[in-house]
Length: 265
Image (tube, rainbow, N blue to C red):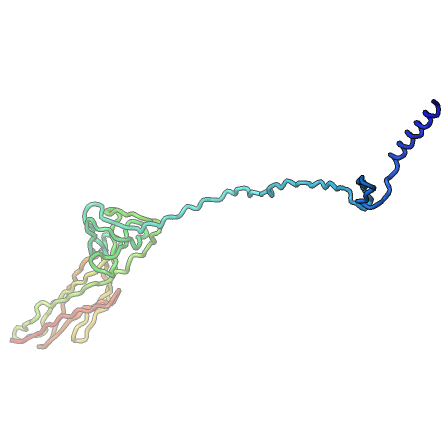
């Protein structure tokens, strides 16, 4: 009885030991008799261990955009082209005068319904300078009191009044034939001259005779445009043809001449 127990203990121990010992190396497909033996390969140090690589995923975010702060800018308002200064009659057609005032002669007219550019103004602002509607290339003045002005008037510059002058001179002898009764000399001859100006001024003038005589220059003042008459006479001492002149010395030079004769019946 004890002997059988001992054999049983030995057999159990041998079985336990055989389970814990490594199997002998041999051909992988070695066959012992009719039984196939499968060899179990244990992991070795040369076999790389499985590696788990954690892949970090970086969440891409939009690059911050810096938006510039809006800057207030001034709004540029286009400046309209100034209207050309124009003038038109207020009610009736108006005189266009040589200078800025009623003391200047009228040399044209601005008719009702007409509108013309303003070229200048008088120093007192009461008259407008325009191109003469009746004579291209010539300027004249219209009164602000009888016209309507429009446009960019502050741009209109002051223009000085024009210099006035003598526009016409005539002279006549009376009579043109003087008779010496009984051929008695000297006999008297009369003559007159008319001086016309276009505005206020002072004229210097003198007479000149065919006999060689001449008077000293004299002034003649005009407060306004218009004409003045000068008269004089002198004596002739013989039969013959004569003449008399009036000479304007200033502001411009004009001469007028009249012919006459003395006869003896």
